[in-house]
Length: 462
Image (tube, rainbow, N blue to C red; front, side):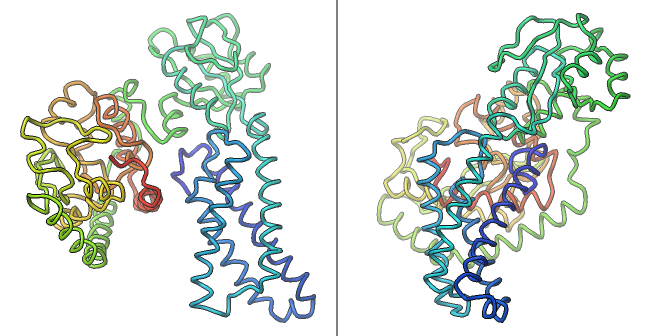
């Protein structure tokens, strides 16, 4: 799971995910051994492993789809218990399908329900201990933030607000006597008052995050070198924020950083694999969805006057315009008075249009745009020329998102709720630039996997 939220604590989540998998797997194996006896268990060991493995995979996928591996924000015990019950209930339905198709993997009822209760007990105890460890920052890496401005405050917000960030800020060092976000009242030292080496030794800091707003004449170069020679890691603030959050802080990125940082290059392999991925998925998607698309077209035709499909000019790769194809979800002449941002509960949307937007059926015809090569399956969402012209004047680096093909889904879509304003465009650009910098086939696959969850739970549609 390399792209769950950011590279710094994805390994922590992966470890937590696999630890729970081991608990589920061995709880079920234990029940097999208890009910079957050692002799019969040994004779049917391979079958028992197969059965326990299937339940483990299904249960963990259901836990993921019910957001039970997102531990950034504290959830109450009752909320966690409710969602866990829903997840396991869904898992039982999925398992019933497998048991119908493959009777050999059926677990006897006494073993299954005993194992189920043991799994619930193991997971509840494990999560209780893990959340306490996160809240108290056990095993969190102590860091010093060099800076007290907006970037330092943004880093502090992400580290403090996310339970599983994996870090704890032990001191700020900067020109100001306060940081705009300092919920834990972390000590703040004026630059020059104490040496960085002394502070690292006092607080046992393992990392210094350089988050200075202006480094000219303020960068304590010698002190940073001394700390680095002592074994303290020195990291750049913008890169640290990127790896922690899965987005770029656009307001603090400068051209030099973009030019010299790794990434921001598609490359031949990525270009070829992305196009191959697009052709395969769009072809399969159009074939599998054709009955649903025919039914959707029929209902649109019966519900309201106007064409079934809605074609609209959007800005594509390298700024070249193209016509995006969608099922019409609004009444005819919805924009007779000019282009406007979509809004929540938009009165222009038809009754059936509201439904197909919720479940993303209106996006299916875009698979034709993907097959034609005008769009990619994964990428920044294409925007209308009138909005692009307006946003490019106000938001730095906005035009960079047009260096690759726009997508049906994307990193911004799965990480940020639906937005229809200039502020939303800025926030989504932070995710689009992160995607552009870290583009790879594995990231595309992860985004598709995340999109499935987004569609199933109807998040972000408007």
